[in-house]
Image (cartoon, rainbow, N blue to C red):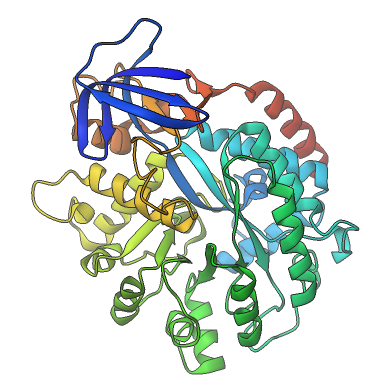
Amino acid sequence: MTSLWFESALLPQGWAAQVRITAANGHIEHVAVGVPPAPGDERHALAVPGMPNLHSHAFQRALAGLTERRGRHADSFWSWRELMYQFVERVEPDELEALSALAYAEMLEAGFTRVGEFHYLHHDRGGVPFADPGELAARIAAAAAHTGIGLTLLPVFYAHGGFGAAAASERQRRFISDPARFARILEASRAAVHGIPGALVGVAPHSLRAVAPAELADVVALGRGGPIHIHIAEQLQEVADCLSWSGRRPIEWLLEHASVDEHWCLVHATHATDAELGAIAARRAVVGLCPITEANLGDGIFPAARFLEHHGRFGVGSDSNIRLDAAEELRQLEYSQRLAQQARNVLAGTGGVSTGRHLFEAALAGGRQALGTAAGGAGAALQAGAPLDLVTLRADDPALIARRDDEILDGWIFSGGRAAIDCVWCAGVRLVSNGRHREREAILARYAKALRRLLA
């Protein structure tokens, strides 16, 4: 039994004072409001639900800061991708686990309590299949289990190098599978997460340029009604190439040819038209936004304000993991809209509404939907029946001193960031204390050893 008491906590009905939460077996049993702490309660100042991270490539944490040198020609997503390919060619299974573990520990320290791992590195160096098709999925699962973060594993089907089933490049060999091999990878991935409490497995057709139309339908069928994630319309070149291939824009083509619904997460969707935004919202799909990575790669600015006018659903992810900070993802999202529109508080919705509160609750709901944990509603916030996934904030952080209610979220998101985080619980286990993961030193030492070999 876990008993926690908070001076203030964000509950489904809003902010409440003197909140006592009891939990057992990783789930909340009772929430009481306006009560004093009981003997033995662990006391904290401020509590909010943990944020889902709906899109991660964990191994890319190791690339942070290594691609910030201008090449001979104008740099872009595509030149960055070549550098990423060069790096990933060297990664061994032990190293993948080490890199992933640090990424997941830092996610927890940053306020994320569940990750959607968009896992496309399946084969050994040179594209040689492992004897166990789930070898690398098992390494992802091990990293998640070690750190304690909740896991929605999204094995990626990647078959081609471009639209129209173009041949893959030599550097894409470690990702490439045919449908039969992918089915084996998927089953092995399900076996890999078996025994990890709360772990789920979805499917991820990588993108329309990497998956042929018939293959897309097959991959969706393999998903058994679970989460379906796909990269879509991230780059203008991708849009132009899709038009040349099909006469349709990527999102337009997908909506015409796939049964997109609430199980789908359209990752990035950066270059969407008004009609496409409305159609995504009508299908109740989630748009997965990764504002820090999208800014780093120069993707462009997703038209979030117009999407919200259609009552669209979104969540946030850390993608390349160049910087891990749940609050900063939300801040970057709002700031991109301010720069584009030359206005303030663009995503607040209506007058008098806290921008931080609106962003936080929308990303919480959208992220949970995209990661397959929204069924039945239990777990949308701190309530009975939900997993005990929560973040405590420091009331003495300069961004939070004397703040109340929604001012707490505004202060954390727009000023405090991860420095304001004190403790983090996931499935009832306190994994972060005083801003540091309980296994940080050992995880960092293993990461450092792996990275030194990779960069030697």
